[in-house]
Length: 233
Length: 270
Image (cartoon, rainbow over all chains, first blue to last red; front, side):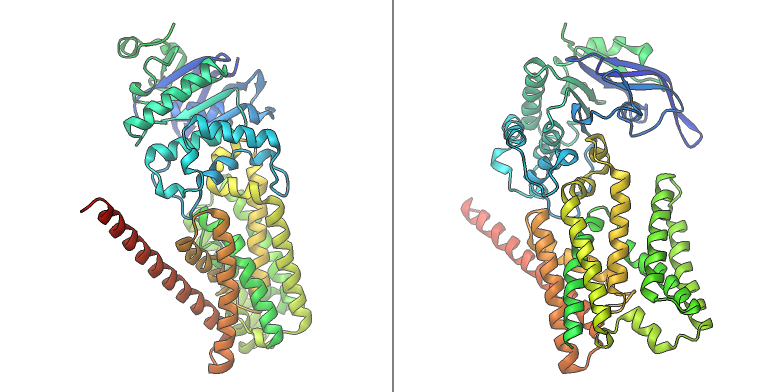
């Protein structure tokens, strides 16, 4: 199991957001997590990634309790893109390379396999022409692809993306879809795709989980989404 | 004058290195706050007859660690931070006045007095700056990841909590290093203004650091020359030169953007 959330609860201040929500994502599986704004789907993912601590329940990554999990190179995370631009100029290359920071050589020297992986993800996401460009000069879709490339440079086994198509144009959505297909079908990566918009994962997701009233597990294959989303068998 | 040049160039070149990370993290005023807290340490040092550098260092490091802990606990709201920072300057002046520290000495620490530095003070500044450079070089990839996106860095396995502490300590070292030369109230400007100027000209984060460092160092040189030939207050002159750099860089950027828009429009036959 790549990701396992077992009856997790969480409250912001006194306001409960999740109540005994459960989610399991197998290795190589593409799962879409949907729900209306404020339903708790982002919170659910943050619990799964150890960015928040559940008040009850357990989170596991690749079988290890999140508190003792250390193999972070197996996990890629694409947070919801901030609407405010970076305060300082940042090139695409720097953003992508920052994904390798945890294992970086102390003088910043790159290993050959790291260089290869950077080349691979940059090609995969069609960013080669923009590597030296400042992020601020790119379109929303290109910026989003750079953030996805950053999450992929460690060759993770699980990729978690939060609203990846927000503010992204149609062409960028196509490139993103093609990249995701490659990651799941060729690289065998597990993908968790958090979105309120089913268009981005329609035809890609093997399973759709809806977060309603702070619960996720009980709403697998929620009826309305079965009609709207063409899930893969 | 030689001592002033060495101290001011070194600290003004190093301050933007740290400044780039705090500006990118949206914490441009943290250096200013640390300067306020450092003043409490200086005041206490005067009161007990200790070295003001040690007092400032102890207070800024403690305040930095305390603020990081408060932030992690979700308690570092605007008001709490303001209370600590303004409390710092109030306590500092209270202690200093009890110790009869003397207005000239206090004004020198708040607004810098590089012309009065001794060589031993200069070497302390150089050592503090060198420590900041070493930490920046060693932690650079991780600090960059932290500055770009703390949550993504954390999921990537970067020890963000420890890095935030390291960055806070680096701010403390710059504040203390700049205390006697550029002043507790002005040193934070040298962490932010050269970076803001560099951001107008650079196309990457690394180039922002280099250009920012160059802007800082050249501001120190020009500011001290202005102070020497025109009798301006040296630290104020240094900061004002940095602000002029920022205005020039902003003007340059606006002009080049206008020119490239015109060229693009001409290319389209508009």
